[in-house]
Every structure is written in structure tokens, then in C-alpha cells.
Length: 220
Image 1 (cartoon, helix red, strand yellow):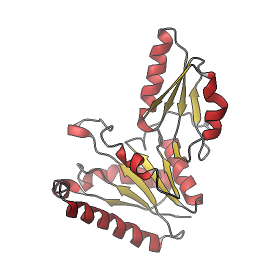
Image 2: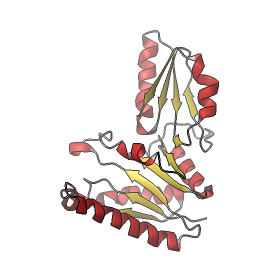
Image 3: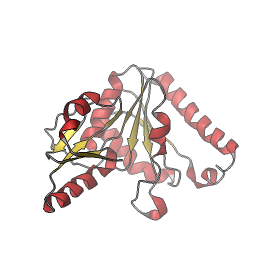
């Protein structure tokens, strides 16, 4: 069932810069993609409350209009942050997940590559509640093999290990794998687990496996 996707654009990026991402998301999901961009002029005024009100009104208007036209009556939100100071750094704006997680009836996903992202989109179509997908440049990245089984709400073991467990969500999964390789060269056996589902959390996996490790480290 077609369900519109709305990108909540990075505050420091011009709308035109999202052209390639919109095309990639439409190709991966087969769904229409819209953009709610803020841009520098309005962002520069966010020291004042009225600017935030304008931004939120813009988001609400876009989402409400698309929801009215959506066959499911819902939309999928994709949050995307802006690289800082012209770099590829995408770690400057993680507060959205923390702010949204307490909201009831909202599923949250942080995919690490295009397979996880596509799975999150498909899962959003089967839910009766809303879904927020946190994307940081990972829609075109490939980490998992094509045959990887990705189930909604479940963690994905990526690398085996016995002493340390690295739990990574989103675009830092690659860094977690590199860290595990460096640790192995120092004689430390580190497992890596991808955690694309932030809410609901895969408590079954945590209860069944986390006790086997001397230490667990989260990377976000």
C-alpha cells in the first residue's frame, strides 16, 4: 500500500541538496517522498519561539495534507540531520530520538544501511501507529549481505565475539565493526550487534544474550 514519506530536512541544507536523497528513497521504497525544509534564514531565527512555531506548523500542515491523501491515513517520517561545517559529520543532532522516544504509540528506527532502511519502511506500512525513521546518510550505504534476515523490532548480530559486545544503531555501525577489528588485533574478542529498532527495543535479545559478555558498549 503506498504511504507517503516526509523528510524532515536538516536545518543547514538547502532543499535542492535533497534531490538525490529523495530520488534514492523513492527508488528504495517505491513511495512518494516530500520534503519539509527549514533553510538558513528561518533557522537563524530559532532563538525566538515564533520561529519554532512556524517550523512546527509547516511540518504539521504538510503531514496532515499527505495523511488525507494517503491510502492508509498515515505517513512515514524520516528525520535527517545536517553535516556540520561542511563535513560528513552527522553526530551533531541526536536529540530528536531522545525527545521522541517517550511519545506513546510511536515506533522509532535508526537504520544502518539500505537493507535496514527498506525493512523499516516496510514495517511502517504494517503498523497502525506512527513511525519515525532516523536517517543520517545511510540510505545508500550497504553493510549487510543481501541475504540478511531483518525482522521488525529485532536486533541483528553482525559479528561474533565472546568478551565484549558493541551495540550500534544507525550510521555508526561501520565504526563499530572497525573498532571490533582493532580490538581483535589486540587480543580482545568483540561481537557487534546492529540495533535498528530503538522503539520497540529488542528486550528478548538483550535478556537472552547480553549476560554472556563481560562488557557491553552502546554506540549511537
